Length: 117
Length: 115
Image 1 (cartoon, each protein chain N blue to C red):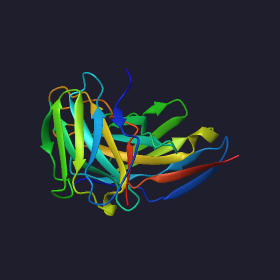
Image 2 (image 1 turned 30 degrees about the vertical axis):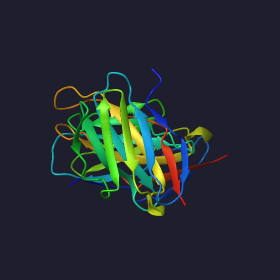
Image 3 (image 1 turned 90 degrees about the vertical axis):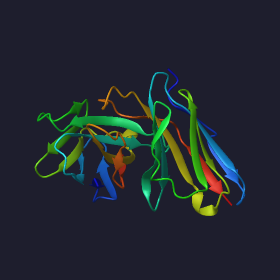
């Protein structure tokens, strides 16, 4: 398996522009997570999905952020409009969840480094 | 809410020596998972080791082992025979056993290996 695939690896955009980050989870995994990593706040959960349904989006900073999972093999995180404070590394991770739990650790993608200038 | 604390922002060790990274956590639950993740300069998050709270035996993976003290809510990582490739950020993380599967991370410890 190719693992969790994120694109792009790097993104530089101007303030006010729309940014879309993409994630392909591991085939068969049914939970997907979006994390943001910054020096100041560390790794923080933005949103997660179970079976393509958003379960907890309390970590999404504000209405400028939105996430979708139209099918089991694809998710997007969109920022519109982007601001310099959104600069961070954004990770996607997936896991196989059986029932109410999973004995496994996450598999992370390589992350997208976003720079908003 | 659960919290994870890593009190050592940076650590260094001589190659081939042993180093221990500290982690404490706070939870009211009795069953949960604890993890150590490694993040090298490539920024890939790599699972190093996992511990189930209901198991008394400490987890071991080759040169990596943990000291899990449930009553003290402590979960330290010991790296034996340190190698240059062990240089990375190390994150301690907590996850509930049931229900929400989100990981709660500590702030990380940057480990330097001196040749």
